[in-house]
Image (cartoon, rainbow over the protein chains, first blue to last red):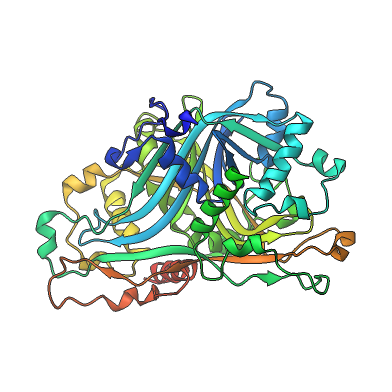
Length: 238
Length: 238
């Protein structure tokens, strides 16, 4: 897709203001950060009050999807949709400098702006309910007990095409003032990673059922972000 | 402090609506989730547009502090402050069920509501600039090159007393429908933890400088959330 290689437009809404040298607007950078995450924070305004709601989300092309939860009541009455901001942030390291001012963190973040709408078309909703499984666990939905009409009714899914987005990344060592490097103060980076533990099989599992081979993308001790990016690739290739 | 043991008031703003059995409002539960994190997401509204901004934050009693960044321009003009929501979420596990509907995640989240204001008093600001170091790295600010007036001027810090808050936690195994447990489908939990890597000493370190003993709260292979809670305890005890 040609849009995959293009950059998002830059407007006052998504322009990176502070530390602007850390910002970028190309789809590849933004998608890499989104696809490495399962958890995002969505900001909405309800009656003038902003909410930052943590939720699972996934990306299909240039559209983001998530479960409705707190905003669904509002969205049901807003057919035209509502402005929203979906943000992902990965903490990659603690940066300890020789001055308080230069203490920092290594991170990768992406902020996406658009208009959120409720997914109401039944076919789109069923497809999204399969996608939320298959995007994280390749080909899993076909193995499961099918979705019931009651479940589809009880599920609210929100979609937001990305109108604008920005990625912001810090990935380097200590950035002290030149004169401060001579001070006898310990400085360095403590890396942070989010990793997978050993799978805990449900204690009510039917005897003889094996873990599907497709879940090998989540190896014990592996990085969550890498597993999720692999899952997204399988989802796009399927 | 007696307020430490009390619960936050429950209003339409912070009441946990979806899966309300996972919610709680007591300070101890909320603080435990906040204190296990360095990264939060703050939601603001600027000209009708919501923003979910990732940022480092810390807690002092019932007040949350963070660096100003995108909201500082707005806050400078809003002396009375602006409504905000600061959210922390920890992903603890991927929950794979026998139906798509019962797939879930284990997590701990806290949403805090209040009115954000710019810290403008010079003494409060200098204290906050020391706290942002000492809250994460016990007693570290005293070892550092002192804060300069230019640095204080270039730093914007936002404070928000917590008016209302809610914690929401899922920490259990697969929650399948009773009839589904008999299906020959693999189900289980894949735990997720955020861990510390080996400290990478700055390559320009003055010869002979040792890593301070207080940084032993960040051991290689240790959990970030546990280290941060220990740091908060030291900060409160200091």
